[in-house]
Length: 176
Image 1 (cartoon, rainbow, N blue to C red):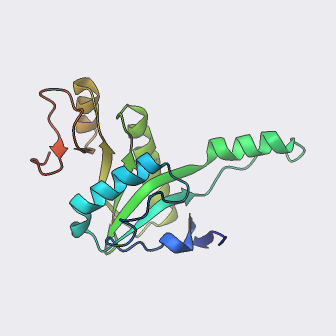
Image 2 (image 1 turned 135 degrees about the vertical axis):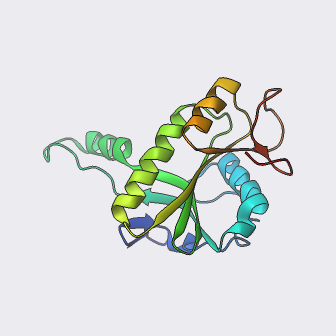
């Protein structure tokens, strides 16, 4: 098993850095992700991937450090897991980044994650321009959609289960 490498303060698996948009579309499950997340992101890349030259999957940002050195190992592991951030996908066009989070049912927590990832990416790579934040999912309620739209986050619904009257982009549909 290959070990993750640190590149410009972002930890990425060397197998997926960079993931050329056409690569990985036949993989059943990307390392560190569920089969559902992998399938949704593959569907999104099939739809939107032509707009980007490369993508990083499962991007880990540096974790926080435990408060006390003498803490038990299980507590240290829990603390590190609780303070680590992992972006599902970052799609790149030159130095421009689009941060993508996948949720089967899109809920408000995804917005917080996207804002955190943008902040961490800009902190770690100040020369990067974040072009867009995107939440990808199969379902969203109209009130949650309004929250994302007001925050300037693009909502991409993939196939089916959206609520009637929801304004969002869909595969093969109109854009937001």
